[in-house]
Image (cartoon, each protein chain N blue to C red):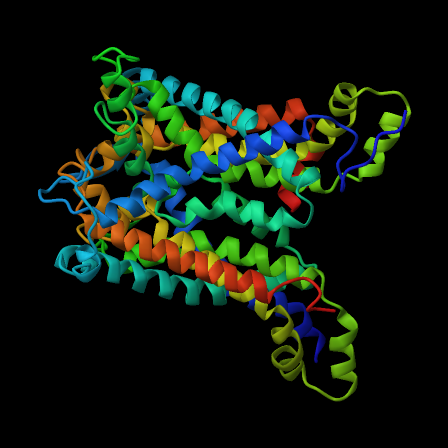
Length: 270
Length: 287
């Protein structure tokens, strides 16, 4: 009984059926996105962008025609950038410490991080709202950003910690033996090595922030971010500009993902 | 480098981030717990009374939605395992050089805003829309047939939105399996089904566990899918909490409901972890 062994496939039949199944799932996942992109090209007349009325490019020309929507997008982008920078810095500190040192209290930090990553967003948003209300703090861009940084820190820390754990300590020791101060060693040796992880962590924070709806919903007050604007407009129908912006954000995300995956191909390191 | 500095170093590195998490995660949770035990309203202020009645009232009033959310969450999770496992399996064992490409294709739709994706489904599923319209015209479906507003639509939306959170952890677990282990099983006369049941599936369990953890909790507490794709008969607890907070500003009740939800989900996760064996949980948590 000799069956040829597939690439890595254990001798199990059904590879073909599973292959088709995988493509069916990919098609199902992609369908709503294609519909969204398609309706950005719809020559719709009324407020409802529901039925296909012909192809047009005019919405791409008028993408910023709706002031409120444009403002919401700008707020979302600003919050996401600030979140990426601040959560990137704070998360790197936490991740580096956890990956590098053994110290008392690290268990607690790990537990809190695990809690922030596994708590329902609804509960986090609600608890922040109760805090802000009891402090009498006004809700707005600041409170949204505070909340986004809070839930992004752990993700950055986890990504950075994973990289720090694989560091070869001897390189740093060599630097120290050659008379580099700890400060110099960190910035000249360690940081460049962990930089890709820091960058991925920051990108993750940016992505989490720009797509966040639930926590923003609780901490925004009257301020409107891009997802909140969409949410508010659903009752009356979405204008095609939303599809155009969604398409552009989608394309930007895809391009960035492709570029980073090509640049971080295994084999470039070590 | 003095020894004091060496001892202090990790604390100094953790301090800014740790402080942020303390101020904006731990303290708000405590605030919310205390608020749920207070009486009063937003105008006259709150008094701490250790008032458990709020919990009793909140749970009795919204028992239906709470139970419904847990049922929807559980169904979503089970459907996700069924949907995601074969995909993760095929990519891990048959993906070959194209593995990253397939994973990328799976993640592609998630570059679109969560709310927008869900609304896009509503557009596809509307009563006379691109899916049901033609089917009704050729008489395959009765005129009154609808999907929107049914539990199926809400659960479908939930499954759709959480697919990557189930596929990726299962994929990672399967990817770690040494194919020689499976070979050995086959050499010892295990047929494919037995090899799968006795070798592959047990080794994939930590991945399934992580996937369940990453999907059951957010799916049960979600309110976007039920609001966009559902109706008054599919209201989930998340919608109740959201409107208690943001519409009626009934903070004690809303806080009590949030905590009840959190407690129920935590108990569920821990019971599930116990049933599966704690080392799996530790493995997942330590990743």
